[in-house]
Image (cartoon, rainbow, N blue to C red):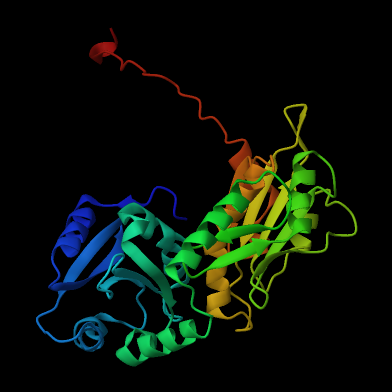
Length: 340
């Protein structure tokens, strides 16, 4: 869903103003017409210590703009030293589903387009309470429990992670979603992707995000390789999100073809059993999972994103793989008046 979305010239201009002016506390950002666009800057007129100023500005400048049913990107100036900014993705539970998916899947684009070197941390919030001074205090307390690292340790950790990602082995791969999130993919999942790329295995690889262990887990394969899309659909969960890679062998115009298809399903009719933050992990992870697959030689020919597995049909998939060519009849010269 984030394909083609980029920062507008207006956003880049206002972001540069934020960097230059310490009196500007923050910047509100929206998605409009496939672009990240600024809504308005948050200008601080108060003074005092950095900590009290931040808490005061959050309650007086930010809180009035937080709505219960509208997603929003928020850039805040929080620290005295560089990087001084915090990027907040606010995706309320009551926002429209497609808006939630779009904002969650584009949050990395926002930081990347504006320059990740300017941001010390990224925060994902789903309630208005999290975006109050007390909410930030709770966030800080929770973060402090995770054995804070020194700057040297952080730098060393980044180097080690970069080395792991650049490695060519099939060991556990750690997928990074910013300074606060990292999620490893198990050996069995990576190996299954490689086998599918080589034409081995069951012809299908299903993955899920495990929020408890914070890993990408491989799901048990079906008892037999699905021989049709309907059989594949019957094996996909109707209550939880899934990533599914499938080698679709079929005949087209007398020739057998076996493209690799990728399905991202995120059911809405889950009876409330799937927490919104768990659902939001999937659009965040989609691109990273595809990158791992590509590193293992698995080239996806067509990607599909649907809510319900039942939306995956033979007709819809074939129409995407083999779109009908509309024959042009050309220009018909009009008849001359009078029949001559």
